[in-house]
Length: 423
Image (tube, rainbow, N blue to C red):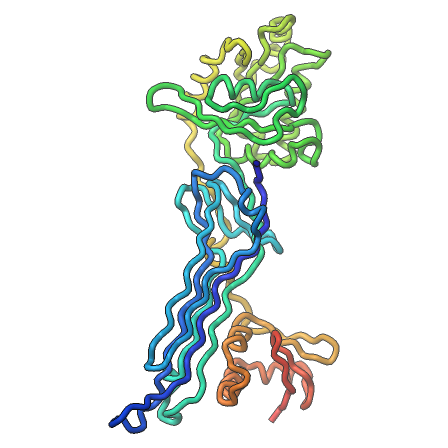
């Protein structure tokens, strides 16, 4: 089945906890701290795979978590890093943060990778906290939690040529005639309900990929028909081939049909209206088609190249394919644009912390302080004392006082709550 949208939850592996241990060996008096560091958590990585054509795998499993780092051990032994989790997606997948819609990355090259959730840092063992004033620290860090977020995946097919036109214009028949693609073909509208890709060979060593985009009708840009779901697939194409039923069957006006689809393309994305476009006047083998072609050419021939073709008999298709091949040679492949300084970095620098208030509780937020709290063993008095010093050096004590905190007021950082003491 064809699925071009998915929403998944990813989480990097938590870092392993640091170890509290002391050296106890014969002939080594006062051996000192000997606890090793925890290992780093694994990353969640998306990799573009040209062998995939759909996001269907993410329909049945939506939660993904990388491996956790191994805890540190005595004898200053560090834990192993967690295993990365590699998820394969089709080439052409756009990755966004689901909550904000922020662009994270655009995977357009086979093998291209993108880290979407980084693993947490391993906690330091007590050997790392020894100082001249504290030669036997009885504290270690917990592992840092891995990054977590919901992602929105959206597939935009990578094709050189996009076939557009009203339902029953003959797009599926055309792609089946010029390529090895075998879409469903029937004599009723909306036979095609998913995009079809086909490889077209022009001559020795020259070929291009064509995409049949289904469901375009008047109002498609606003959700009418199926076009709202699939218009995105023409955004990456280099040229458009507009297929028009020139036979005028059922009293249709080919010129009006042509303008209807072009208007929908422009309303969906103005850049689509600027793409090079060839016009294929299809069903030229039917009665009255050639008479309609004269009228059609008189109206549009000065602005567009018009190719009378028959997807049924094959008439005119060689000339159309040859012209597409020559035109593509003049249009370079456009490199994808990715916003942001680094698409692999999910979190950008901001305020070190924020102070808010909910009822009578002061809420302290911010990635840096939340990370410190998460890596602190709150059952260890020495570790809590270190956290208090960190908060003081960050200026959180002063900020709470300036925000109106009084002795005995409750302060909350993530799940950690304590009483404020201006002492």
